[in-house]
Image (cartoon, rainbow, N blue to C red; front, top):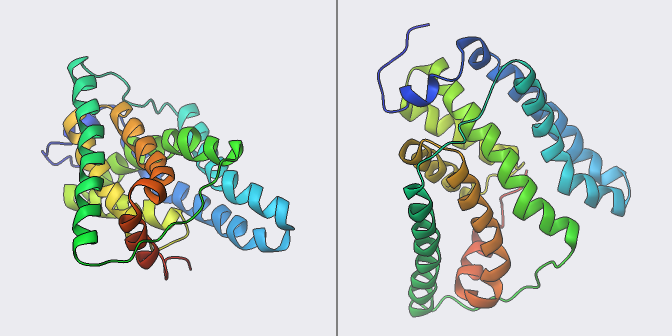
Length: 230
């Protein structure tokens, strides 16, 4: 397979063409399982439905990662120590952005929306630990690189991997797509999956803080999420 010289070439050096070609097979497997989970939750009772909604999608991605690991895939973990400082600066910039956005939305008169947030341990575990790790490993460290090797275009790799990341949540929520775009850019900068996992976890954690500390941003998210689910 012909490899195009782009900034992502170095990242792709640890992913074989054979594993890259399995990307569409793994996506088909995931979305088949996800569809069963998504529609099956409505027929399994309230408690079972909540449980599989929280952990079912992650379990499907986890199976894909196990398959990849057995086939020789290894994630890019290593990064220079200076990148730790950059990661902390990125987190600070993210919360500063939320503060500025909240002030702007307040200035244009967007009404305040306050909603309750979950304090259930299982939900927090899924949002803050499990999801950021396995989703970044699959959608960025594997799928992003695999899409590039398959399509030969950095732009297409970014758009396709981010699009699949959004659809993997069984939604059309633009926030997930935008997070995918940002994560792809960060992966090129940091050359490591660790900062992406941290950033993803912080984004999920901020969803617990937004209703209380950024109510106008919460109002915007409510409006954006009205038609997100299939």
